[in-house]
Amino acid sequence: MQAVPTYGRNLIQTLDKEFLADCVVFCAPEAWEIVRGRFPGRPREVAVPRSMEQSVIEEQIRAMPSAQTVLGFGGGSACDAAKMYAWMTGARLILVPSILSVDAPYTKAIGVRIDHRVRYVGEVVPAHLLIDFDLIQQAPPRLNRAGIGDILSIYTALWDWRLASEQTGETFDQATADRSRQLFDRMVRGAREIRDCSEQGLRLLSELFIGEVALCEEFGNSRPEEGSEHYFAYCLESITRKTYLHGELIAFAVILVSLYQEQPVDELIEFLREVGVEVRLERIGVSLPEVERALLALPEYLKQEKQLPFGIFHHRGASRDSVRALIDRLGGLYIIRRE
Image (cartoon, rainbow, N blue to C red):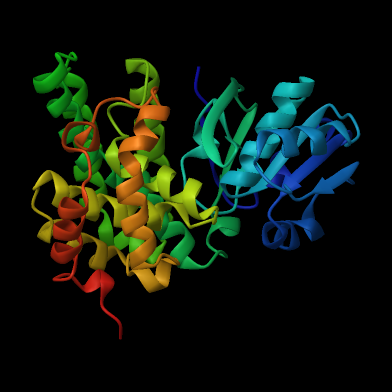
């Protein structure tokens, strides 16, 4: 079962007042400032997730009042925190993303961190998923444009999957791969609308998330959409313990991993420029030494994270020489130049 979004404007006013008579809210502060004046009710508590470390968010939820409904206003953290509350307490879940930067509002699984490593726990489907254009279009365009990251990753993920089929005998489902590639191509065709964060572009992002999540759930895992680009991002996050704008980090990682896979990157870079997604290292908060550290750490990281399917770094590893060669190839691209 998957959430079916409702599209429109001022959608909070359409909710059954009974849902909001006994509720708590998890939010991003900026999102709550926008909606609080027209929120039709008085929540028992309005909370900002202190951290998505599982132990921290569980402790925060246990200290909150019980309620029949929990609402999530914001990005991935607010939505995942609300999902966690619903899973732990049985409360009705309503998600109102204020940005479309990640696919978290569309997935049943709850993304948390354990010792700064990504883990997925529980499953919960919202009673309502409201895609409110009034709310989302008030966010900085950069945040919504970053939503392309979890679709762009199809480019490197499908290459990894085919490699795994050749090297390990893992089954490669061509029909599933074709459907995944169709999502990627649809995203590329919609670059201008996504850049403009128009209603059409935001609806496109939403529909791409729906398609990607449905495809992965149908297949049984995230193989059609996630590969070594995500592994690099996970490893970097575990090393630096920093928080990044997920879609921008993944977009950079797709370029990086595509080079390691020896795939063409010119069209990817042209698309990223057209859609206006930032991948320059200094702009996304990543240093070149951090990139090198994460690349060199990846082989050992993947030995520990055995649940991650076979990809290019399982196959080729990452030696100092290969990492230096990869960094040199990056040097010819605008993404690591200083202005």
